Length: 141
Image (cartoon, rainbow, N blue to C red; front, side):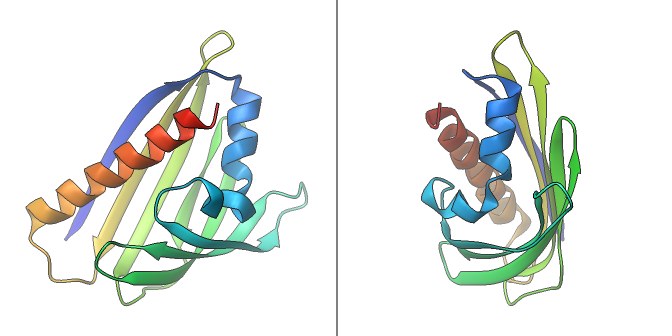
């Protein structure tokens, strides 16, 4: 069963600064909650991450996985390259909107876990992940 949700926050920085922070996947482990390791494997012709390897603390276990990224002017999206012991699938996106020197940032995630967890536990975990990640982004600026 996959779960999907989103969360929007206002960041006190221009879109270009927020986008640069988010696209710096190689340094994601320095601020993104639960991210233990992050490594860009491949970049596109503009130097943005095209594929990355991440190690994430999933509270009950660690998960190592790869994500493929697609970039747009106002953000980017990603998908899980192949299933892991924790995730059958993952897709997500950051979408940014200029609010006159501030940025409205929306994180959307959809995850289908391999772990036998009740739906309400998966939803609560996803909401916690969204809250932690967006709060951490706000604190970067």
